Image 1 (cartoon, rainbow, N blue to C red):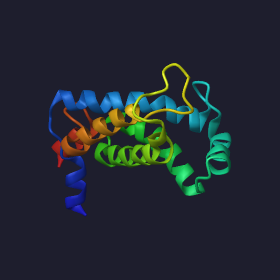
Image 2 (tube, rainbow, N blue to C red):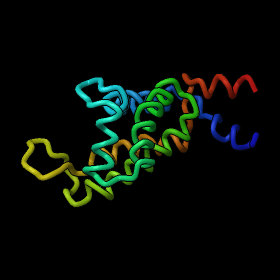
Image 3 (cartoon, rainbow, N blue to C red):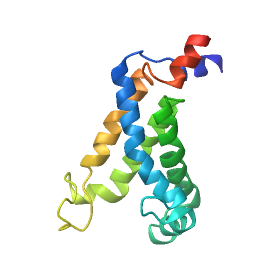
Image 4 (cartoon, one colour):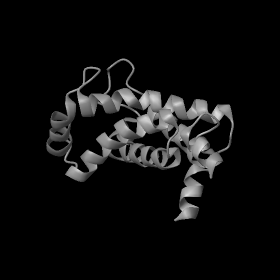
Length: 151
């Protein structure tokens, strides 16, 4: 268990990785806040769960996981707390998004609203940032770095 904690908290003390982690968290946070709290024009937890399970056909546990990963994962990434775990969760989630809803629409996002859905370019950027965090950790300015230094 101690090795797992050490692996999760060890970080490359580069400011660049702090920037990558913070950017990922800040980009994902509004999406999670829409789904959980109804902020930023979102519909909130109940309506989002209903949409995911009824209209999209996702299981309740997957729908719940998406909401939790986007909201709590983004906050944890912004703070740099257990960032590798949350980055892995986001990467897995976005791989699922690509496979289930975006692959059929091609690479490019639907910038002009003239396609039936979104392409996967945005999701690839999210996965790329997440992989950077998984490989390098939270960076210099992070709770992970503070905890690791105290051990």
